[in-house]
Image 1: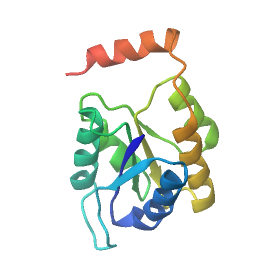
Image 2: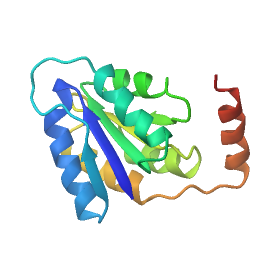
Image 3: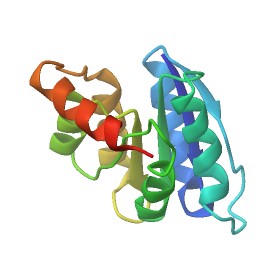
Length: 145
């Protein structure tokens, strides 16, 4: 898979760790920035990454900020994005199996690097179940503006 990854200044360190996991699992990874801890606006990084996932240039995307909240809100403004804010392994698995999330958001200030790596690994390795869940996703997608 091709994975887009981005953060804001508060997520730079965790982003670097997650990039290693993506590559370790055999996926391609493109970093949409930033590359420093200088203060930036999360939307400036979430939107470009989400747009590339939505247009099919990338299969999935991972976004990291201080809490994950800002990045997930911004990404979910892009038509076709189902970005899940996740801070535990069960949610990482369920958002793929039941919600077919195509983007994952995490908060570096909320979840430690060890669990974040396992969340990313679980999310990347879990498939969508389809079936009744596809019908539900279809309803959500048809509501998008």
